[in-house]
Each structure stands twice: as structure tokens, then as C-alpha cells.
Amino acid sequence: MPESAHVRHSGEGKAFWMLNGLYEVKASSDETNGAMTVMEMTIPEGMGPPPHTHPGTESVYVIEGTVRYHIAGETVEGGPGSFFHIPEGTLERFEPTSTVRMLITYAPGGIEKFFAEAGEPAQRRELPPQSDTPPDVDRLIEIAKRHGIEMQPMPA
Image 1 (spheres, helix red, strand yellow):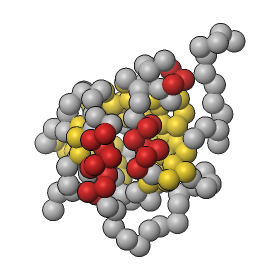
Image 2: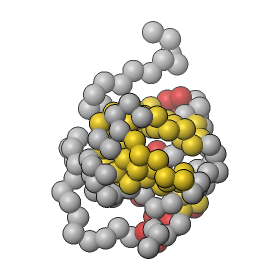
Image 3: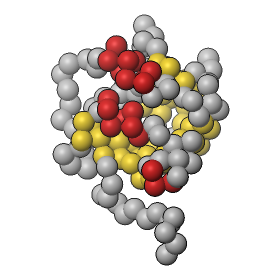
Image 4: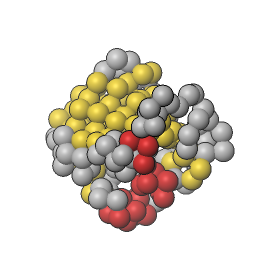
């Protein structure tokens, strides 16, 4: 196999727990020469991120479950097989309306460094024990800034 090829099997690679979800790195920016980051996310109902913009594009494929996406002021529902492409700089957020599993590609890569700093290493490849405290959104906003992500507080 060429030196630049990348293969990752189920359960391999780095994984993080954040916002009561499991965030698995399938391909990091280091493994793709900075071209992209690919992540599989399993997120419980109601645990989506605050509104934010990325310095690059985001492409999302829903594998299982349902999600409500808010993209540039519009709301779109999605389920298994739905695909969303969000251009660079577009304000967006999503709300899982059931436990959702999604494959997300960020281009260029590097966003896995945000998840590594904002989350914690996953002890198992499953959803973490549910936290009984609300997320520290101010902390997320501060960490996001360091990674070129503009994050806003959650809407009321």
C-alpha cells in the first residue's frame, strides 16, 4: 500500500467524549496531509453543539437516527441517508432529535484538535455516562476560538 494511504477499522484511532457524545477520529489532519478530518459522531437526543462557523467546509452524512439542522437561518430535518454540506463561514448548529450517528468530513483538516482539547479521551467506544451538569458553553467558546471556530451561546 502507498505510504500516504490510510486505513482505519472499527474501534481504531482516537475517540473523545464531549457533550454526552462519542466523537471518533477516522482520519486526522496529520494522516491526510492537512487536507481533511473525518469523524464519526454518536450523539444523544438534544446534545448538539452551540451555533458556530468553521474556517473550512463541513459535509455530514447521517448513518442512523434523526437530526434537525439549522443552517444560515433555515431549518432542515434529516434522517438515515441525509447529506448536508455547509460552506465555510456559514452559521450552523444541529440538534439530534434521537440518538444520531453521523460521518462528518471537515476540509481542510485540523478540527480534531478542538475535540481533543474540549473533550476527554473516551474510555470505551460507547456513549459516556450522562452528565447531570449543563455543558460549560463559555469554555467551549474559548477553546473554539483557539481553533478558528467562532462559537456563540445557545439560543434561548
